[in-house]
Image 1 (cartoon, rainbow, N blue to C red):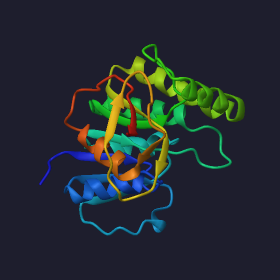
Image 2: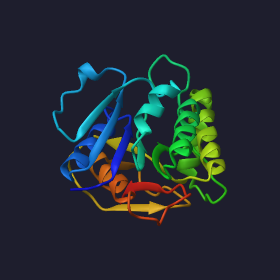
Image 3: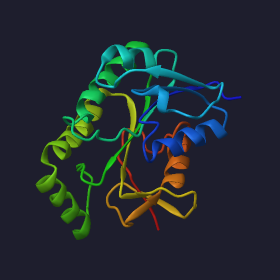
Image 4: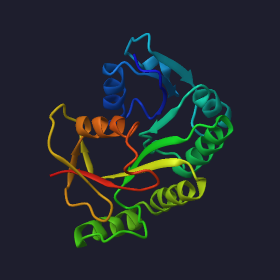
Length: 211
């Protein structure tokens, strides 16, 4: 039995549900922040549900209390203002209060870091996001900057298109460029869970993709 208790945000999304299943299969204790707990169907004594919203600090505070790791696969809710920097501020604040250090979070290809050498296709995709979703895209960049300033042991995993599949492929993590166009949700979940004890990408933003 694992002793780490994992706080999970975005656990019912297209990648989050694979993450929750992976953690459950490995017998981790999980605290799951849900806006609509009534829609959650997995029954597992190791899963504790916290009803609330990541924009609400009290909800996040309650979630992160007693947890040693935080993992977020948070997606943008339709029709709402961009959520990412608001979420990050609350998560970082609560983690610092409780002395929780490890934060693993996913984002898109559009986030830039000083270490990037993005290929033409990825640069075009980034430009397209800024043209079509300027507020959300800028907010994801702000999330990266908040993490850099946080001094937590964060890892921001940058992703191409997520395929909701149980299939397993070869993966590659690269700090400079995304050389694949897809990532299996199953492979993503396995990578995120592997980062709980892996220090390779602490305070870094790897691209993750299937080769």
